[in-house]
Length: 94
Image (cartoon, rainbow, N blue to C red):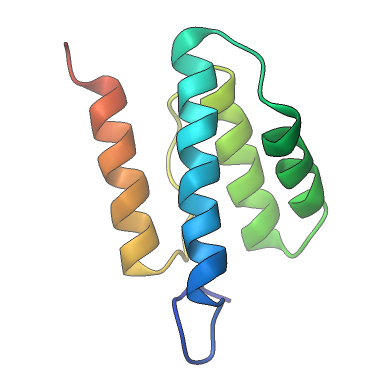
């Protein structure tokens, strides 16, 4: 199952929500801060789901802990690209 926008995949709203959650997790990790209750609740909501979603949740929890991991396999090109850009921004000096 791939996280894809539109036909046969997750709705665009969910993909946008995942992007926003990834930003919140990255911000928490970069600032060494706690996740907001909303972000933590969203992550808890995908824990234990099908493997791709639980892999994504583990990746995002890593970001929130300040760990730069590898993106989960099977993401749609758009979501994988967004997460790649986020990882690049986190690892560039600056």
